[in-house]
Amino acid sequence: MARAVPETHGEILAAAARRFAVTGYKGTSLQDIARAVGCSKATVLYHFANKEALLSELMAPAIAVLEALDARIAGATGAAAQEIAGAGFVDLAVRFRREIALLRGEFPDLLQQPAFAHIQEISERLIAAFAGHSDRPSARIAALVVLAGIAETCGEFIDIPDDELRPALLAVVRRALEPPVT
Image 1 (cartoon, rainbow, N blue to C red):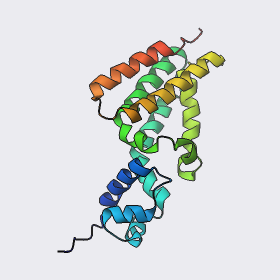
Image 2 (tube, rainbow, N blue to C red; image 1 turned 45 degrees about the vertical axis):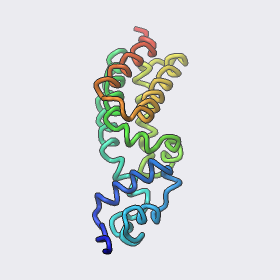
Image 3 (tube, helix red, strand yellow; image 1 turned 135 degrees about the vertical axis):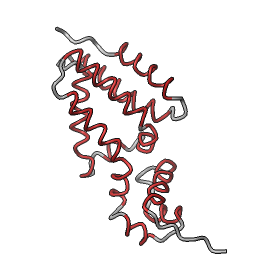
């Protein structure tokens, strides 16, 4: 018996997420996604203009939360900026750790794509907030290590319960960041 051709938007997104997780974004073709869904490449292209559009839609909820966090840290300084950035980014990373896992190792390349170019600017503002808006190299280094470490940890530990992962990450953030100079 022939399998019904799944042509729904959601099925293509789910198949793309699974393929990206296995072979990475760059290592996955639209044909791979079509084959995983059981449809033609033309069907995938009917729903999505290209592979970047597929990834953009997969990442849209996480990017919206990141943009909201960016807005929350905009007016904060010193310890308040660190607290907002730390708790906000930990919450985002824990909530969207499957999406983070999809991008592990490919994040720098993805930032070169037009749909994700603004993420680099947000990352810079997050690093500044994590550093308490300090210009001290040691504060900025700690901020970058913490930011990258949170993302890497959440991508690695997908199966740890949220209520266990979140407090562990927040404890690391508080220990690793330098207090702002007042």
